[in-house]
Picture 1 (cartoon, rainbow, N blue to C red):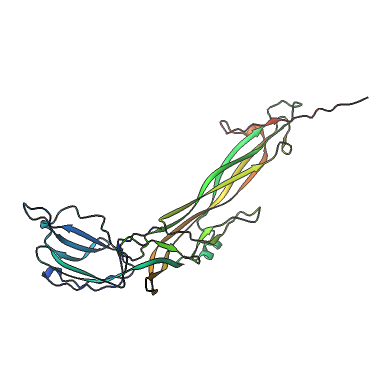
Picture 2 (picture 1 turned 180 degrees about the vertical axis):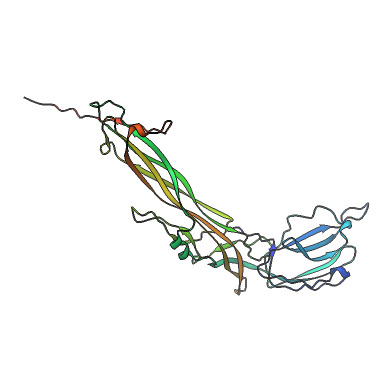
Length: 324
């Protein structure tokens, strides 16, 4: 997932002086989604000349405001605020008709890296495997193949195969790394693994298992293409006598694992010191196994009208030369 670095979090206490309405003793938790909103000052008949109002929201709730009354501000708010990266602890501010001063208290500036080093799922992967939860059969293809020659006619052979492109996905939803600014990207540590449906080793099994797979990156959604291929029969192997038919089917198993998670983020500063904190969100993975394919004998008279029909081919005969 690519986290939204304009969100702030860490337990904090705001200390404000100036207007009475600027005073605030709200706190927020490390996992709260916090955002900063800024409006310019626009005196009547004059151009914009200073920041007029700053608000900090917890979700949709305005928990801190400093500055002039809303009617003295421009709308819409200023977007695309550019900050360095750090973790904010609190803020103090002073205002009259505009924002005179505002000071953010940072844990440390000059952060050089941010890494997701651990993820703990609320849902138990082994319990999901025992219940085959989220795993379903997906039909890929189905057709009938017949030899239309009358009894005593030519033999034919058939093949049934194909390839479909599917996508294994890993998705992090509503996570936050609790950073201010957008200059630091969060990477994924080599030890971070997540549940995803894996390939099946048993040729005849009809069940599948979620396995621990490395999380590749913190994008909102990561997709990895996978070709699902099947084939039944060869030109020499599958023989159809005149007036014989088969019904061929191909299918695979797909698994969707979903769970809330708690992640551990490790930040590193220029002086070599580190700081770890927890973040929460939701994880979802979709995985595909290999395919299964099968052709079974079928009576031509029982092939439904309008059914999809494959093509059989005449058996090729080798020329044989005799010498006397």
